[in-house]
Length: 301
Length: 309
Image 1 (cartoon, one colour):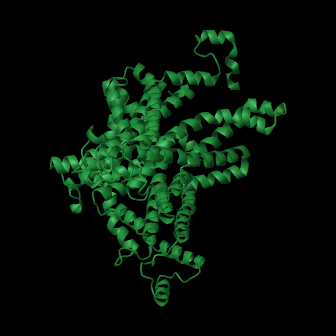
Image 2 (cartoon, helix red, strand yellow; image 1 turned 180 degrees about the vertical axis):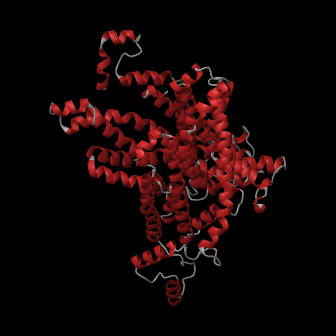
Image 3 (tube, rainbow over the protein chains, first blue to last red; image 1 turned 60 degrees about the vertical axis):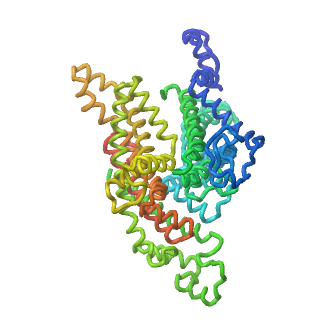
């Protein structure tokens, strides 16, 4: 927020034709709002999230309601089976949005776990510096070269396919890049003259952290996090697809896709809806991530 | 460069040790043992089984023995495929997976780089937008969706290609798995290549080359491509790792006898030695490929080389 100080000069602001008025954050916000793809993506994502919350609660068919008379019905407006029914006669429409609940939750929760570990670890390494930093980052280097997906699979196999373990397993291996980002930013900000002068005038460590380090770290972290959510959703669907992720009676987009693959020749529409929703979600998060990066770091364009 | 290579190799050793250690202790921390069956085994039988597999030793002793065996290329017996040991299974599966992965990698590289180059040269024109939209789609749609749809369309409806199976690596059997495996990487490579090209096309030395009056074709081929390909080389390691892990699912869908199928069967059936063996082998491969990719990166870019010292 303080970095905007330089731009407070009125002449500068006028020279930039209003484009540069306000703090850097405000400018970033304005640039972001002007990015149409990102704004539409936010709307679409909110709609998907809202539908995932509301539809399973209010739809005429319950998620686990099976009916032997209605097996593998094609999509139709009759009888509320808009996306058809699966091999157990369960309504695919409500299942797709119920799966969305779980896929989105897993995307968010795993990212939160990764965020917690990554930011904590990176901040400690970057802020302490010196030998501790060297040692901590060497560990990250080593973990980096592990085949992580294999480790997620081992973790899930060994400790059972409990949904909370999936959060932890994915989160526990996806924090590495975050810790590098946070540590790198912290180190580079710490070396800046304005931090030096803040130290010289006797600002306390927490104050420096709050005023200089955190604002500088937030940008890249936010960008990375919006790109990590879809990655983690994809990892979960991958796990579910090979039978190591979410287990029945819960469902997720990955599991729905995996079940649909078995019925691909008789009921090809079953794969259509979960796969489309998954792809749309991937698109949206990627557009938002790109938009945030462009907005927060205009030099990157 | 030599110092860098040696240092990286020196880091590779603790990394491999970490892989072996982590997989060993994770597996041992698992509740239940490999011989838990529905019907309880006679304690005496169980004891004999434990002795036969060395499981009666203290944990640290088992760990030492396991490491010593792994160093000699012996990953122990498979618990699911009873007549095979893990080394044999990997020896059966790896050529299949490698052939699939290398082909997919080549396809992704050639097509991806070409698309990226052409898109950059037609920046902001129709081809550029079309390619980048396709690339976004390629990244957004996971291979376990494309693979069954490809199989359904080309195999079942058009009957052009086999739906599944390996058939000793016949070309027709390779087409669909290779496409499904290559697509996501192809998309990422196209984006990387385009980005690299756009950056270099704006660089001063390119402007100089143009100012000298070189024909555009020569500028692109002699000056731009070399520098623009650098980020791509740095991505080769991760790309191969991505293809190797992606191949797990593709092998499952197309029923190919590669390492991936053994890995998933092993994981689902708690065949600990098999899973550990495959993780160690793949970990080693990924580390070596990353190292090679980094070395090539440094060889191409003097700025990177400087940071490696």
